[in-house]
Amino acid sequence: MGTELETRANVVDTTFIEHHANYQQLRNLAEDNRAEYDDLVRMHTDKAEVNADEDNDELAVEIVPRTTGLLPNLPPEATFASQTVYDLPSQFIRAMVAACPQDAQLTFDQVMFVAKFADACDCAWEDESKPPKERRTHHILLLGQGGSGKTHVMQKLVFDVVGFIWPSPSPDEPTLHVVAFSNAQAKNISTKDLKARTIHNACCMRVQKLENPRMRPGGKQKGLTRLWDKCMVLVIEEISMVSAPMYNMLDFRSMYGRSKTHEMHEHNYAQHGDAFVKIPIVIHLGDFLQLKPTANISLIDDLNAKNDSANAFITTFL
Image (cartoon, rainbow, N blue to C red; front, side, top):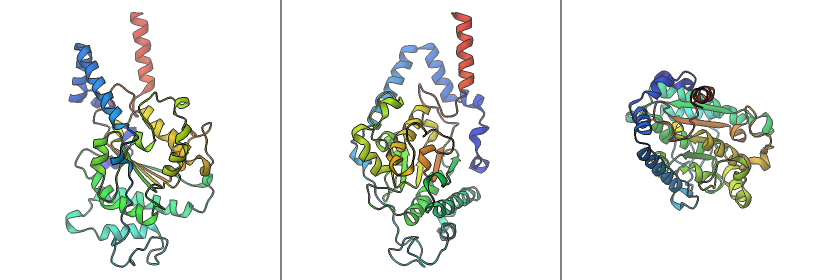
């Protein structure tokens, strides 16, 4: 991960992304064989439709992270609120890092991420007694190539920490949401104690046009409230594959899930600092040097450049 723990999205070399071998191959295919390219996009869309199935029972069941046996000095069945060993979440997290077995020790870069996460947990714990409008939010970007240890930190530390500090009231009212674009990505980050969801599943959505007026919850309101109202930490896996419209869908539908208790509604959900209706901690995992969303807008696309390119095309050819 290295310096990628910084907000690398601000300095990503988009020229490198555009000339990445796989991406260049896709572009060439679009230019040289449009029929084959359209088939590829159609296949991608078909897979997305499967991933979006809100009735996918395998990924619809939340399993509460374990809260027992985390550290030997904690009473059995203790939660952070009931124990008297640690005053702050960061103290507990520091003890968890120190207790990692030899073959699972964190690297320096992973420890730097955990330090930021621990600070965010302290703030979220302190803010629970404040009105929703006064609560702080922490969006953490954890970027790195495959094998750099992002999933390891989530599975071996973050999931258990959240389950201990903020235990879910029930399996269908999670305090931790882990979401991904596809079933395969969701399964990859899942553990025996926690099942990740596809983004569509977490939003109680099927594939449809991702326009706000079409995404109002209707009969899904109760389900969204149950899923999102208690959420304290949101983890988004493989963020580079999440298109801008899908990211808005997650924001929009989680807003409806939290609107009754967090003073946020459709007319003001997009205000700066209110993303995901003030879920205290949002962790974005991934690598923006991988493939972008197929036939869609990436979160790091330069829309001004796209507009300039389109205008130049119109001026030249039309």
